[in-house]
Amino acid sequence: DPSRLETKLSTSPGPSDKIKSGEVRWGTLFTNHMFEAEWHLEEGWSVPRVVPRHSIELDPAASVLHYGLEVFEGLKAHRGTKDGKIRLFRPDKNIRRMAVSCARLGLATFDQQMMLECLRRYVMIERDWVPHGRGTALYLRPTCIAIDPKLGVARSKRNLFYIIASPVGHYFQGGNCGVNLLATTKYFRSFPGGIGFCKTGANYALGIVPSEEASRLGCHQVLWLSDAKNRFVTEAGVMNFFVLFKGSKRPELVTAPLDGTILDGVVRSSILDLVRSWGTIDVSERKYSIDEVVQGIVNGQVIEAFGSGTASIITPVTGIHYQDKMYPINSETNKKITPQLLKSMQDIFYGEVDDTFSWNVQV
Ligand code: COI
Image 1 (cartoon, rainbow, N blue to C red):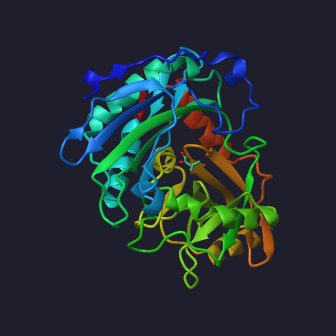
Image 2: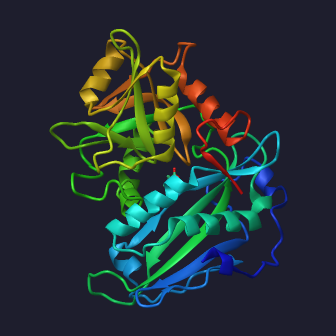
């Protein structure tokens, strides 16, 4: 219950100039406080607390350390460039997705409205850490872990829920100038009936070594395909993935459907709503193969490609490496929708235009 929130303030120094410099590596600087609450199968939720950020002591047998019983979220608070107001971008979507991930992994359930209120109160306490300027945000990382000391593979009776926060700029080093993706048929991220739709550590852990292979081939991220046979394009590293095809009458913006194998991205869904509202581009959530994409690049049918995510926002894709060949994606047209989409989204994040979709929640 957020109205019972207990607060113990930190004596550490505040944000200072550290958060103004763009030099801090993404996700390595943290605010002074964390939100925490425990859940117990019989007792329910503890009184929630905001306390000075601290290490967590876990029993070495804690389920999270053995079976990966962990779920997390990523969402952002932005500071209005004109009015200085702090807005959360679609926190209800992240909270709902967290509930879905928790349900799949047998972690605690919670009241989503109360969770939103806890989040809001926590951000209020950390408001000085929300950086100033377009392209920056306070990145919030709600996390839920199973902490029972128990080696049996079963649902955990005790969970720890916490939120930490990190002032951030661009996710990719070198700014938003674009990434190359390695479409691999050696590794796969998910499968029908699996946990591809969950935001859980395992879905990212399995990509770390493949992304190092990508990096050796001049790529920043892996482009995940469905399976070795069909090779449908699913999502990329830390992003959902979009391709803009020329189409026969009008351009077609394509992204993979939510079939349970990909993450239901908040920026993904916002892009779909935004582009549908323009009415000038056909929007398709459909299956499409890597062969369709590389052929489209070769014959000029692919106009643009980009990734979307809370961390990466909207990042142009400048090339795809597939079967030992790099296919650069044309970056010369001045009618590109990638920068236009990024601008439209950021105008909403930073309160520069009317929030006609009612996506922002003011803190
Ligand atoms: C996000 O975009 O918020 C993510 O969670 C990606 C992350 C694993 C860096």
